[in-house]
Every structure is written in structure tokens, then in C-alpha cells.
Length: 140
Image (cartoon, rainbow, N blue to C red; front, side, top):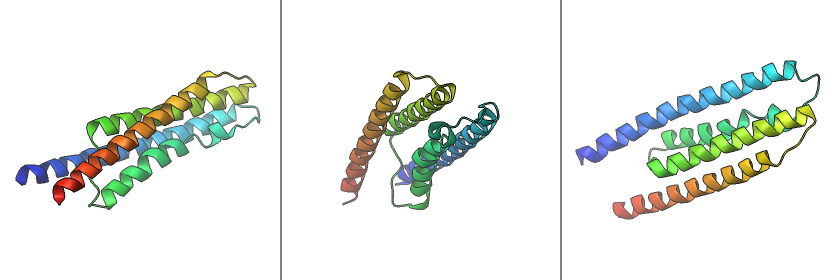
């Protein structure tokens, strides 16, 4: 019993640390856009403008919900790694697409990065849901 309480407390501390990193990443993306926008010669791309929204929507909001709703179990290591990898790939793909749009160029690489990123996100969600159903089945 005590070990499960300590494990839950450790998981919450890890989630708080991840939340701080995700907020910093989102702020970095916003600052990167603002600086890049100065040198973009008036050309804009929604992929660059809303670059900060990927880590905000995919990391900050779900992690904040897990911390606020105490009945939700934290993600497993594999689920968390898959989700974080997907977020990184989608954010990097959006960054590349924004740079290519502003430069007036194109490439298929950022499309593939986004597709693989969303696949990692889906895998992370499935792993979380499988772990959550296993967690709730043990409670009954």
C-alpha cells in the first residue's frame, strides 16, 4: 500500500517536471516564431505562426489534466515516450513546413514527419488507454 502511494507521488512529480519542460518548449516555439518573423520579409505561414500550439495542445493540456484530475493514473513509461516522440515529430514537421512555406520552397519530408508523429501519438494514446483499463480493472 505504501509503495503504491510513493509510486503515485513520484509519478505526479515526474508529471510536474514534464509540464514545466512542455511550457518552456511552447514558450521557446513562440519566441522562435517571433524572431523568425522579423526576418521573414512579411511572408507568413500558419505552420510557423501556430508552432507553439503543438506542444501546448499535445503536452501542456493533457499533462495538466492528469495533474488536476487525481483519479486519472499517470502514463506508463512506454506510453509517455511514444507520446513525447510524436509531439516532437509533429512540432519539428510544422517548423520545417513553416520554414519551407516562408522560403517559397517545398519538400515531402515534413509531411512524412507529421504522419509518423501522429502515428506515435496514436500509439501513445492506445498504450495509455490499455494501461488505464488495466489500472481500473485492478481497482475493482
